[in-house]
Length: 127
Image: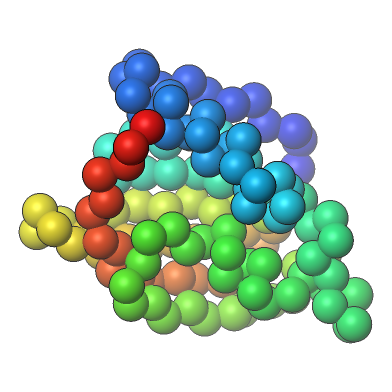
């Protein structure tokens, strides 16, 4: 997968949130970067880095981390092992004003690695 170029959103507040996440200890620890985000959509890239398990494939917890945000309920299905750079693409499929349901697909190149369905609590960020 070619190295993606971050896309800055038009909304300065969203850009602040993306920058805050990308500079967080958690994102740096797992080598994750939000590449694109806007209302109801996000695309996150994570290099495998140090997230290999003893079988030399990416640990399921790392795959889970690239798909999860502020979830209160989650179902993830692991489909294939991964060893390279992952891309998680999230789409909001429902929203009631307090909770949103998301479908997140995790890919390594064009191969599907995991499918994630979750309910997220809407959080008002301080940034």
